[in-house]
Amino acid sequence: MLKSPASNPTAGVHSADTQAKIEASEKTFSLNAKDKYYAWLFLGPSLLILGVFIFYPMFRTLYLSLFLTNTVGKPTVFVGLQNYVNLLTSADYLNSLLVTMVYVLGVTAATIVLGLLLANLASKQLAGIGIFRTLFSATMGVSVSVAAIFWLFIFNPSTGFLALMSTWLHLPVIPWLTNSTWAMIAVIITTVWMNLGFTFLILFGAIQSVPRTLYEAASIEGASSRFQFFHITIPSISPTLFFVSIVTLIEGFKSFGLIDLMTKGGPTNATNMLVYRIYKDAFYSGNFSQASAESLILTVIIALFTLLQFKVLEKRVNY
Image: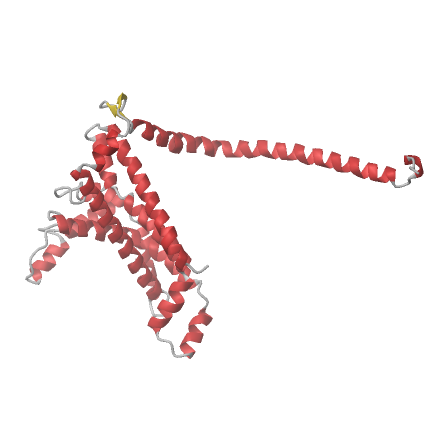
């Protein structure tokens, strides 16, 4: 026999609870819609800046790479992928690609190794180590132009510090900036010196966060300093090493200022990196379509190298 709502004393309570839940749900929906409005309000300026300075130039570059352009960068004739084909079959461009790879790998390896060694040394409790910590990280405050002038003086073949030292030691003077091989070594040395401060500081902070008890236990067991470095320090800071390797690699591909001020891509295009080549093709030759294609190729190369690092190095990271 069915009971009427009046005969069921709990029916009114259940109905009131249901109504309250509906009202609460509607209020929550209203608040969520309001929150979304405020979210778009606060994100708007950032999205506008990203759109104007990141996304629009990116799509504009892709667009220009599919055309021939005049000297002021306006597209004239649609050529599709022909700009890419011309670049990838050009011996001059392939030479720039090879030069860039040598430079980037040299800078990345030297910066990480030296930064790690200096950070490990600076973490020791030695007299006056604070002075060395300051010196090792001081290059972070040096601008590219100042660094270029400083190293140009050192590499000067007649009055430079290295030339004077060679003369004093009765050694042949090395043509640092006029020989293809030595010019590459010179810009690698300069770039490593510029990047070393940041790398040192990041790795030093990571080493300082490693628990001292691990080293104390290893010392009690008779482990050498070398064993502790390779089996405690490096595994413990592997996430930081992974981060530093990615940042250093990307910065290596983006190097421009030192090349422009020290060698201008010479001698005989020995230091004509991809970024500097883009600059010369766009603003010296007025070939904006080719420069756009080169920019996109460089973007793909950086993405592939970064992906490769994630695939290979991340497996060795201990979180």
